[in-house]
Length: 109
Image (tube, rainbow, N blue to C red; front, side):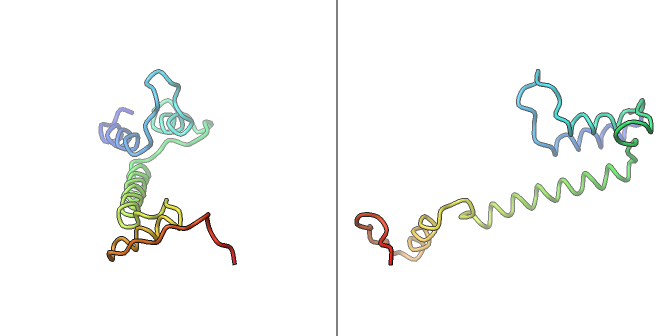
């Protein structure tokens, strides 16, 4: 990694990946593959051929777009991870209604 531009791309790619839990923990396989593909000592016989700056830039743009997409999805769909009953209750609260409390659980018909 003698090229400063490649070093910058490598660090930017690492920032887009999920962080490692501890500094003393071993690298994740994806981190290891990225390191090997960016290192200048990797030969064509390794698991990945050396990465070009164009490929690294495209990968970086893709990872940033995926992070932005996930952020927007969470922001504009806040009820995605909720149960159906909770979503209905919160929807009713938005228009100023309270749902009646159920007696003895759900009534099956």
